[in-house]
Amino acid sequence: MAKIGNNYEAEYENTEKQGGGGGILPHMYAQLQAESINLPETKDKKGFQAEITFEVIAPEEFKGRKFWAYWTIVHSDGYQHGAYKYGKPMFDRFGRAVGEEITADTDTDDLLFKSFVAEVGIQVGNANPAGGFYKNKNQIERFFYEDANAKEPVPELGVIGDGTQGKKLNEDRPAPAPANDNRPAAAAKPGAAAAPAGRRPWGAK
Image (spheres, rainbow, N blue to C red):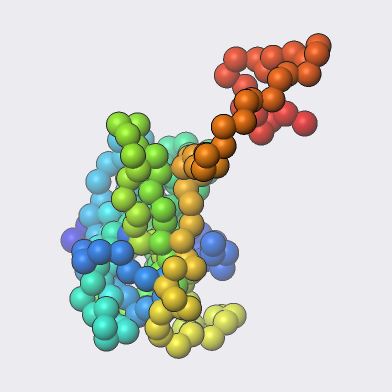
């Protein structure tokens, strides 16, 4: 049992916009519940995460399977902090899906073992600095609401297509080099200036 805390900013309206035991789940619509929620401090000591274990209730063939989410829900840098910008709205959407408007006084026990329906996707692991890639993981892509303001129906539960369409690459995963591409690198155009060191290539216009 843990109170969310006085630094939690209640923003119920953010729940409208939506965008990880037992191996990777397929891309599917599933009935879920939160089995446990812990609130560890973030690594930079400037906020807190919601460390959540989600358990599948249905479809029956996946009942009891689990995956995890780590959402930054409080951070002193606010929406300037990327993990908070993602995690805070996700936590609010989760609250709405289980019928709780999360505020500073919300207790994590109030969010446990309450069923909701969500689209479960697959996040492809980023490159590991030590070599290879981190493991793929499941994540919630969309929550479906059953309150009076819900704008879309709750879908039929089950695997979507062949279960692989929900895979998403993380931003820092490099694209694989073309197979057997032994062509020499293109020569620089005469007079072309080198990009300043440290400049992000996508900043060029």
